[in-house]
Image: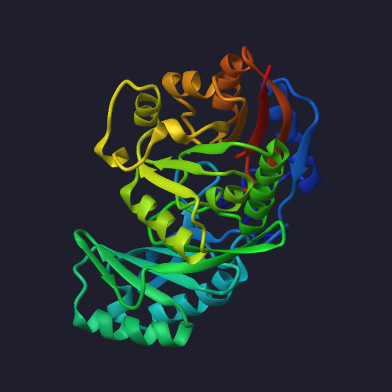
Length: 367
């Protein structure tokens, strides 16, 4: 990828390295931190890879521009191209800006635009304002939906206007099977669909190698890993703290006709308390926990990694699939997990080309 804003826009801080050197640098860091050499490396498309993006709106007199934080993180740089985003975004964002600049109603007090799209050209655009939105805004925004063939949401303090719908539909191909995901505005989604497919496929390959028992999953989100991996196990217990994400996961389970998953709203700490018998939850009253025979656990925690109780809990399960967005906390947690388990396989997934961010995965088996 070549971009005229390399060196000024802070979105791509590895702009000065060619792609292969970026991968070498990232895999070397993960390998050294987790003390495992045989990492598989899963590459990204070189451009048009991001399915979600956020841009500030910078007002220069009567003209609006897209803006990003600059490379020194002490100001902004206005941009007139961005090749990171998927084509459905790239094909609409500049037409959107032209229309905004031609409309006093759309541009007044506008301070940000968020895009969410899928590989099947379903697009959601959220416009952020420092003003209350009225019927005039709604009328112009509805015309904008027709022109862009996209769904528009307007947000201001204490106000959210959904003109048509507040979600997109994504379709992922895993192990020659198509999975549909509904993804909502504001919910967590994987940013790079092609690498996401590779990441799920890697995890499913590990799950298939086990061949028995049930799956426990913490931080399941909208069911990104849960749905494809469910076919490898008898039953699945998947937990997530967000009520909205659990609703989304149940919806995705239904549209994919999957019937062996129990999605439960529990934090990782609550999951440890429930499975350890330290506390009972009404949310689990219809589930007989003793019937689950967990042969594998999948965890995909935030950057802070796992809490001590969760590490203690999963240390008793024979197989662990650990997906990490922070190699430092992964290495920290592995120092404990490797007292009971050995690393069988590891991988780097390049979700964020041209940045120092690293996504990785580790498969462990109990000694």
